[in-house]
Image 1 (spheres, rainbow, N blue to C red):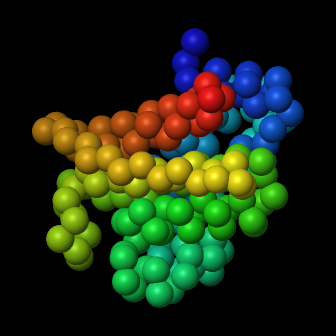
Image 2: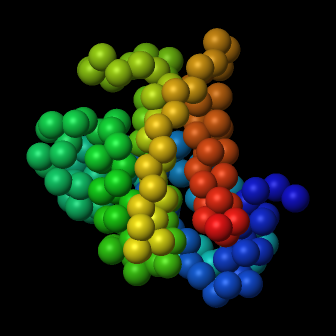
Length: 159
């Protein structure tokens, strides 16, 4: 069973709603969840916040956070996941921000650097990844980041 199938099943069994805030994955996590039959009962919304303006204005990421740490940072991922929970009222949320490639952004951060945050509203966990692919960098980074985000959601249910 694929991770997204397990997640939809677990959410359904527990009566929980999941939401996403995605940047570098461009909605891939939401797509994978909504590919599963029955997901409409456990997934209401995903925000693709590709720009800093949307991270700030919609998700509530502080401008100071963006200015100080950048869009690709632990702090931004944490504020994204907390913001999407507040915005939607969901039970669980995952957020991803990173540099998909093949080119970096205007910072010195490497291609493949990704921060993934998960929150149940009580606690928030942020993990840092550095994906390293030689071919099809952009798609590979996005796929790997989505895989890791789905795994973080599954880890919540294993606890």
